[in-house]
Image (cartoon, rainbow, N blue to C red):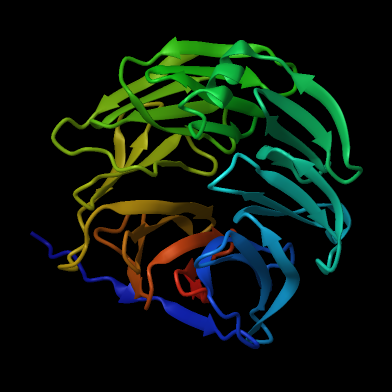
Length: 361
């Protein structure tokens, strides 16, 4: 048997912060700017629910605070036409999510909308927000509400105990809701039409939408995975690993009907949902301190498909289709708390101390 090679070390660059932010840490959001030479991160105060925003310039080798502290915990960061920056925050103590549109330098808030961001079309500046028990479509650049999407299934998911189990996006803008422990509903965000309503047969732990294909997948706590094709509304695949439970963070391939499925053992399966066959399986990380992993990104480029995954601690691993074992690894100082990729083989990780590190895959 050919021995599986040990992962090589990833090239890493950590940037210092210009100045100090007493009491701050926990990078909970990070996103590449369109130029991809710098990123913006949201840092959460360790005690109060306040967020600082920092721009990390890879070329300058430094991070600088660019916005005054905002109430709430950092969520998504996005970029709109004209260089405007979008931030989404939420608060743990009260149900008060908010979406803000900033000037390009983040010196001023241009518009603020109370609601939880479900889906953003950055090319048009339109966003779909959960407000109370309904979904509203907004022109975020103008700060104007365009219309309201009415759906009993979505209302049940937004108002009930399963509210966190609501996702949106993909090639076809949809919202996938779990209004019950074993039920999902898929609603077209443009028309309000219900595309799918199913009892999946198990308690749902995770919902995920394919970025480039009309597919959704759900996972269960005991290793079940079910995928649906939205054009036909039919069940496309039903898989199970009864002896090796599925971990929390499954992820779709950027362009293919492949689902990346981490296992609690630390192993990883890349599954072709169209054929039902495994594209590849990777064993658990040989590191003695390893355990369950979270899939951070599935990256597809001319060089091939790579999967970036992280342990619950500070270790990040990269696998490549066609290569046995883990291709490369990086050992941080603090646990990874946020991550983003720019599609060109560059990943940025934020950690529990507030620092960011650029990794070249």
